[in-house]
Length: 117
Image (cartoon, rainbow, N blue to C red):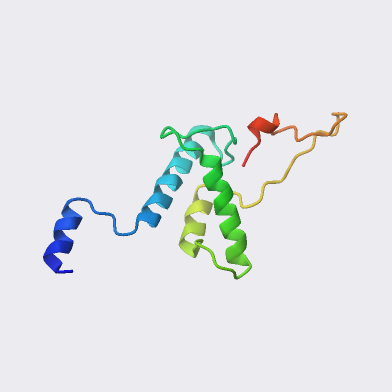
């Protein structure tokens, strides 16, 4: 491809790395959520302003992180880890049990429909 064509595409806003761009869009949604709610712990029922279920993306990031740490194939990178940690992302959630409840369900999570991811 010629330099002129590359320049023309870039002037039109062509995205060369669509996967990276999509990742940054979800990251920005999570960052906005964190600013609004004070945490990156997104309820599974939450949909972003764009209508996307952010919790699915978060679950994928945690899975990719595990695979990255185990040395397997992963889309996770050191840069992505740093970006997520910079906004307070937690790789593993610790379940708090309500010992006063007869069923000892996670008190901070509410119903199963509102589980935190």
